[in-house]
Length: 562
Ligand code: FES
Figure 1: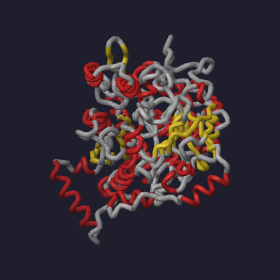
Figure 2: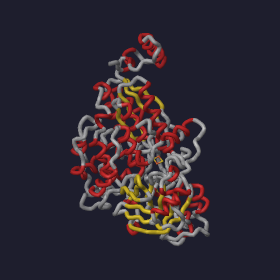
Figure 3: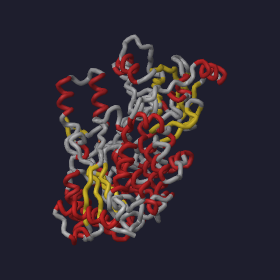
């Protein structure tokens, strides 16, 4: 089999000429014949001025290249798109599949024997894992690492749970503009991904738990020297994968890896987005995610990681406490410990090397968890026939079984117009409903599921209400919030049938979400108002997205990529 520069030649009808031409061009970059004979490690460059979370990528690439060269292979850096949460319009989720497709195709198109994928900001790691799973070339992930924490008036801060909390304080009239501006400059004190257990941290932990990255790479802060050393080690390991021709993602991502990822998702108080991405990755592997098994696992796996939004601390503290390997040790009897990893051994090896940190309170022992059950609960009912999810670890205990009157918003714009209207008929026990925010409805399933508490209730001291939508929410957010209702309202899901004043019953222990309206009445409403998906865009990626995106329960991947 062809290796290195001889792989995947450009088609001119004459392979000898193709290689001759390729060598002629690459020599323009100053490469020697010796360098060009080596196995090649491709390295994705996801740096962008629009992506501050990836601000350390140039440093990581330098360290990665050093590692690859020290191990005798040739590093070749190539760009891919880079998606940042707050710079992607209409929402980063709309672009995840584009990054997955682009990464997959550029790995296929260019000669390389292994690839290092540098990701971090929410949608990047899942897109890269989806790509790696589809290409099945030896691959190793390198997360950029979390940002460090900031401080404000003696309080520790970090994006983005505190962004939401302090914005809420401002909306409630408890923080003036001057202090808000001060806080704005302190919430994101360095490059790196969000400091709490948001989607980026969740996916970095899942990546490590699946064995796709080296131990400790999920939590070492982005700015620390240790991360550069891990990058160098990743480069060395990638060179070994290139020489050996494996293990490949298909050898790493067996049922054990997905089980371990699911257990860790529960135990870290992980992001609801993690579940969508896990479903998309499972789809790429041809093994649709088993939601019942995921939920059953959540009854046995407690939340052990004491990080915001479920707990108190930040990612750098998780690292100081031993990071993912130490957590895996705590969960060992619930894991598939003989699952292989890109490091060359198994999860059991990572557990054996885990560090004990005396006195730490970030990774709790099983005997004193943050919550007895896992982070996420999968709900079903007449409002969500294909399922919905709630992050029970970041919800309010007294609302876990609750019946309230629906207050319905047609879409994000409607919500923006009316949520703070003093005339809005809403009380603290009502259930806020937002529809037309699913994968096709919005489109792209924005993180609008964290419906703000109406200002007049905020001013009365209301901190949480039951909220339901077919949208997503940031992993950094908190509240009694039901998300990912499937099928979405825009394709005829029952969320479209809810009317103001209808009783909605949430029963998290019973895993139910129901509209308490007679079935005959719902059938009459459905007949009177058939689904109205948004018009198809005339062209381009937006059209491809609308025509092929799957529902949340299938990970919102494109149907032709699964
Ligand atoms: Fe990039 Fe939060 S905005 S990880």
